[in-house]
Image (cartoon, rainbow, N blue to C red; front, top):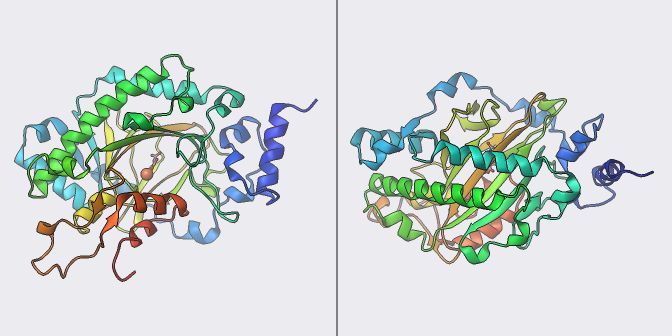
Length: 367
Ligand SMILES: O=C(O)CCC(=O)C(=O)O
Ligand SMILES: [Fe+2]
């Protein structure tokens, strides 16, 4: 009898041996569940890539920690710290964000509950690449491209007319309510942060939010199964986010996220109930490169699967992004980014292989 597991392995092998070019059907969690005894070449990182890795885990304790309650009360010291974090790290941990612990725990449980379902059930929510939402492999990849050791579920949260319920799991039963409750809370955090970032950039508190027009919001739940040889694969390839800001909720006790700093990779160790925030490409463009959208990646491990929930905030697709006038010198001679329509930028970044910060080249002069 041919079992589901046999089919998955056969389909995976066909892709991995180049007989079909549809990597979207490769499901890593299922490969691991079926005890695939080898790591398929399509997932193996090249020796050249690995040789470029510089381990800077000694710097993990130095990753900035920002107290959002202090920021909300416009504490000058905290605002300065935020500015340093955005200039020098592009990433920070956010504490005192005001999201109740219960909301964080429930959304992590709901997401974990979905990934625990049998593959056949999850397949019902398969990704539609036109919609850019659903369960599967989100990036359009070429036939030669290496594949990441992860599966994901992407949902558009806001504006509501882009929410397509056919992609929303109905098991666990509270999935939708829980994700909506978390999304409402995390949006408030994003708005507070954008307020502080506006002040930091010398504008009125509402300036950045208004620049987004109707700020869109999407959730990507990443699931990284264990890997028998974690050094050979990568959970998510190095990339910068095409967002204005991203807010990440990570699993407690499993480190996987690593960020580029001083030419090496610095792991971001999860801290219970805190969030990880990063500046995306849009703020880098608005600030003419002053605040950095930093390359990051996720690695896997041998013993424990990891999950992360990344929420991306983005401008309306009609918004034209370019360095803000007051950030440029009077002649504009220090301008490094051209004007781009956000929708075009997003389409470009989704079509391309995720390859470090190459997306930003699309809007950069002289590149
Ligand atoms: O899993 C992580 O920690 C990183 C996820 C991420 O970078 C993304 O979804 O864009
Ligand atoms: Fe990311």
